[in-house]
Every structure is written in C-alpha cells, then in structure tokens.
Length: 236
Image (cartoon, rainbow, N blue to C red):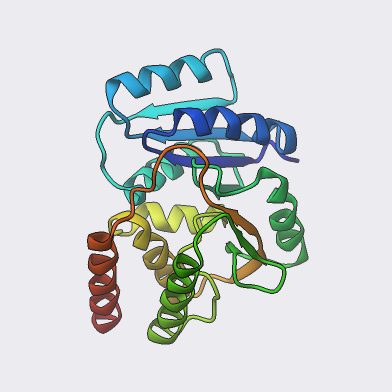
C-alpha cells in the first residue's frame, strides 16, 4: 500500500526544480500524497501554483514568506496527519539533491524492522556525494563527526533532509517544540527522537548538488547552527 505514505517538501524559490521532482515522485511513488510547503514570494508561488494545478495528489501550502525549514516541515507533518490512513511520511529537499528512485531503499529498511526514523545517509557504505567541491564535502563530514560525538547519537548523517518517519514520530514532533532554524533543525529532530526512545535507522543514498538556483546556507548560518547544537546538548 503506497497510498498510506505522504511526502513533505519544504520549498523556497525552487519552481524549476520542483517541476522535475514531481515527475520523479510520480514515477516511483505515484499513489503517495505530496505536500509542498512553499515560502516563496507571491510571484514565484504563482508559478508553482500553475505547476501543481489539477494534480489531485498534491497539496500546496503557501506561506508567502521565508519562515524556516523546520516550521515548514512541521506544517507539512500536520497536514499529513489529517489523513487517518497515513502511516509513514517522507521528508525530502526540493532542490533535486534527493533521487526519488531511492525511495525503495527506505521501504526495504522499513519492512526489515520497526523504525520510527530512517535517515538517507551520504556517509554509510554505498552512500555518495556528487557534483560538489571537495572542501564542502570535507566540511560536511567534519560537522557530522562532531555532531555524532557531541550529541551521543550513533548516526552517520545528522544533516540529511531525506528521511522517512513513522506516524508516531510525526505525531510526537508536531506536539513538541522545535527551536532550531534552517538546516540544523534536522539535527534537533534526530536528537529529540533519540532522547524519547524512538528507533532510528539509516540507508545509503546518493546526494546530488543542485543544478538550478542557489543554496540558502551561508557561513553565518553555519556558525549559528554550531552554537545552537552546543546549547542544545548542554540543556539536555
């Protein structure tokens, strides 16, 4: 049953990428419900509306201002929970970093045991990073090694946005306070689920650097993210 799965996609100025992503999703999980939470301006959002018009399995939530990845995903989770038959929720990026062809890896892992969060990892054996400068890859690896050591969670990729959640995990996350902004929200979510005893697994994925548009992550966000994680662990 693939119609008990939804896919939450946070979006900000990703019209060209999303049109391609939707086609990929329809090929590999055609019965899944797709929820796009878009923070783009009115002009960009209107283009996105035209793309998803008349697609019955796609829900577009238009927020019209940049309010952060974390709150976008939580809003998508709440929309998913409205369907009582929804058992699992994917989260994935809107910039084509994640390949819908790899949905099957998550599904196989899900069927192999009771997991509440399955992370698509770039750093497991079989995982790859493509089309990005080597220094960026090294920085990402260092960040993830630090996060694993500091937070005490045995995961290899804390900042991957390609994930599959159980309904129980989604329900918990919609009822708890997510404090982080930006990409470090992914680490906070993982840490909270770990602390609550949810079962966590990983599968290898290939991560592709974007072809269109530009990344929203900058040096200031990296610094703020580091400070947030330091405070989060100390606070317990």
